[in-house]
Length: 86
Image (cartoon, rainbow, N blue to C red; front, side):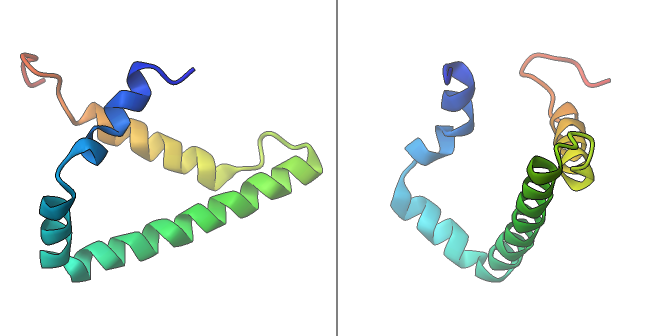
């Protein structure tokens, strides 16, 4: 179930922890702000999912759908190697 996609999304975890610690610490303020935003968003999506599970309404998680669409749009802006820009 977790083939190539898992390897792709965890590739950074294979990096040098010391280098990443230095990079993230050098940008501590913006990184911490982003983490706070992500945590709040994740908590809001978790509440939506729990509400949907309780109600049985699969159309309920609006924030989840918006976040997934945002991810699709962001991914679309990243071109594959050797792919010409649109």
